[in-house]
Length: 356
Image (cartoon, rainbow, N blue to C red; front, top):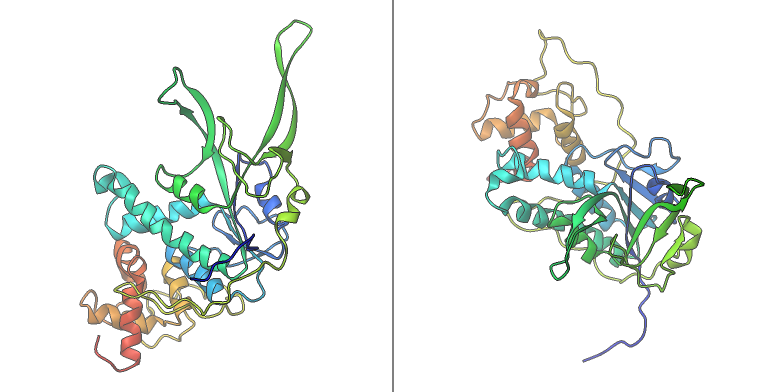
């Protein structure tokens, strides 16, 4: 069996987390060739390149999948933030199962399902890393009470603001975890009372009882929260494995790879008057009255209003001439959006004149 000795240069999987306002997005924007998937809307004041804001978990997976299949021209992909992406994932699996929250799945089951679904995102991001693209997950931090099983007493520590089974998954996935915070020094004033001073922004790169952090580059444990302090770890052209594009997923939820993004879509046309509702035969690019989450999926897959209406009628949910805007909102979110892969499969089959 052939073996390889020595260091292997590759792109990096990075997690940057910290309290709000510390400058996480600004820091991530300085990575080489950064393109943002802004799930939170926190980059509006930054001059960065970004994708259209994903309106659903399915759209988010499609956007990452597109770059995994088309990595040329992208050096760093940033998801800002991971905890908002997780909320989209929670909404997706709860809507699909007609549950109000993860607790409705039964003791602990919802969190297991969440970790499995979120793992799909991490797998697609790993495909990007294998092709030489750095991946950065930006996340908020939260303070939790922590107690060691072999120690007496408890203490506060900073952790990723993710669910109990998702956070360990992300920490294991990452090559580097940087915890950013304001460094505060406590001194005694003239009255010999403690007073907090300072406030310089720093980042921690190694594990500490009070926070999670790690790196494999031999970085100092504490550094100024400036990209130049770690820039040498992220060359613009990372070594990539020369592998064929991954095969599409198989099974009931398989979906063809998304089309390359086109020019930004124009604002939807005004809502049609009630006397002239949208129906079969509506032009392909007119999504008036279609909820945004569904409209985004339709645009990405090249599905018209009439395509969806025919698929819905074929399954017996609504007559074909029923405007999409008249569908029950729960049906739209719980069936058309949550099970879009299956809906899209029916649409494709009808276009290819093959049995459903």
